[in-house]
Image (tube, rainbow, N blue to C red; front, side):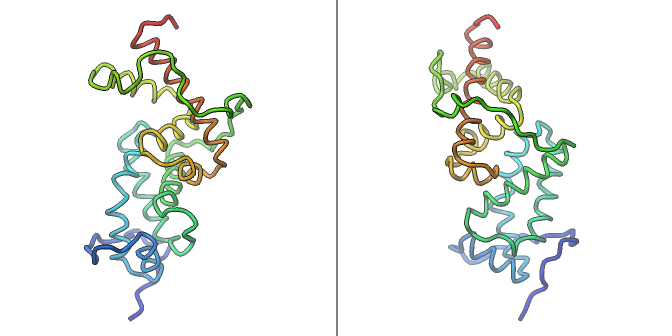
Length: 207
């Protein structure tokens, strides 16, 4: 029996449902394209928590992140047939979510000027204690959070996807919609800025 086709104007994208174990995201996305709300509900169950965490890191606002996730799921349901499986479903959904987050922020995407030397490495500059060495300290964790929040949006986005969410460079680049080299450049700049901030905050280096 043919299910109802997803529609952009449908405000109720899915109803969570347990489907047989072992189905991949691609298989569920195919079924969702056929109009299966339960399949899309399973995709929602798998990815909405992580998406909300990612968008919170970008917006720094809990309600804004929640609203962005909801709008992203609505848009994803309406556009699920356009998912071509060249990247992971999670990357595709995160890209939609990030677009919604920027929409909520009321800002257009900005192309930042990045110096060529920043593209030579994506390694963290060794300027003092590493995050691993200070992770047990609540004060240190708070400082890391502040340093992340202070980053420009494009750099914060790269750091969140790679270092917080654990995406590979390729996955993060696909999610953001840029090349891997550009992603590495933003990541290097973001990490370096965070290290400088942590030096000032944690080690007491003058600003």
